[in-house]
Amino acid sequence: MDFEEMKVLWDSQNEDPLYAVNQAGLHAMLLRESCDFRRAVFWRDLREISIGIVASTGFLLFGRLLVAGQPELLASWFNIKVSPTAWDLVALVVAAILWIHYALWQYASRKRQEHRERKFAASLLGDLEREIAGTEHQIRMLKNVLGWGVLPVWTATFLFLFVAFRLLDLSGWIVLVVGVAFLGAVVLDLRWKQRPIPRDLLPRKHELESLREKLRASEG
Image (cartoon, rainbow, N blue to C red; front, side, top):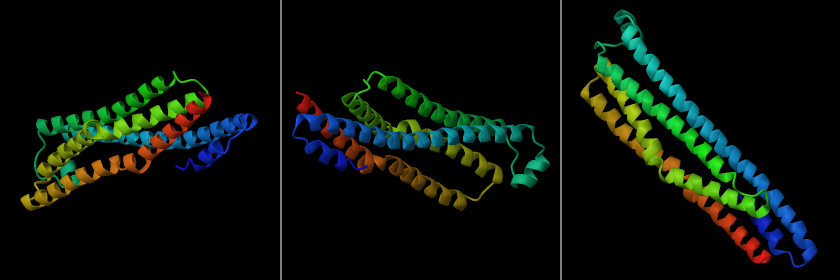
């Protein structure tokens, strides 16, 4: 994100007639940048919510297949060597619940933030405050993503792998190698999800706050 054009436009004002033009120009640029930012957040949220719904549905369908499917058919499709038990179904149901919890939490968090942002006025200062609040919300979400996102999702993945490894009767070495890779994937996923905080969100927040302070000082 680059607010340099805004800053130059704002800092160049010296006379009252230019002030009105600059304010309108700043507002238009802010709204364009806001549209790009919110579009990116929307598509990210839609992707994550969709993944949660699809994964949850898939686990439930697989659990249903384990319960109602014919043993010969399961063995031919998935090379299952161990008969499924009720605990396998329980593990898959819990995994499905964790995935749908992830999707619903993301959706509810988005809706709560949209409700909070309705209080801001439709003005340059009001839109600045709205964008700062939206950026701070994204920072909070990603800082807390371990609890609401990473742990539920990877716990669900662990439960699925546990059931799959048991049914396939894999050797201990394969389980060990996959377990190490699993832990590495959890760490990488956490770092990847939090990467936008220092790279994009904190700089955006500081630039918006700088513009807000200049606007308040000029109006004061």
